[in-house]
Length: 182
Image 1 (tube, one colour):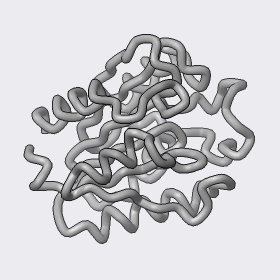
Image 2 (spheres, helix red, strand yellow):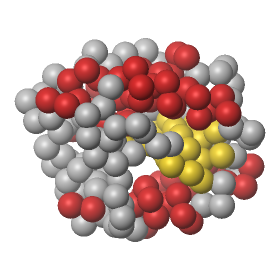
Image 3 (tube, rainbow, N blue to C red):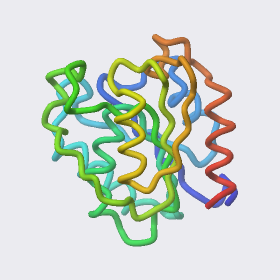
């Protein structure tokens, strides 16, 4: 599938993906890309975040590909069963937090109990071997449950600006692989 044929909805995590973050760069780079804004990036509410995702997908004028990072992965998985059937063609999921782990911020706790049902669209889950918010084993369990292809990005931290991932060209290559598959 070509990027021009879909709307790419970028879903940042807790605190938003600020300037320099690969998600903001991708939103600027993709002619059909846009960030799904949340009312409160720092004190997230699961109901508000999932509603914003569902509304953005419903309002899209083309088929949709979702690009979620961190807490937005949890929000997307919570929202998946409420998305219009067949409208989402794929999802690129990066660095999901393990809500059962000890490193997840307290602000994110309402997103716990992330469903473990298969996602109703193809997905690629990209994780680091040394992400403080999710272990490789827990990420593999998530990928299996969601029916996601799994890619380990090496020692890449939380795959954000703080871990040195501004433009993240390797991520673009992985995203391209997902787009070719769908």
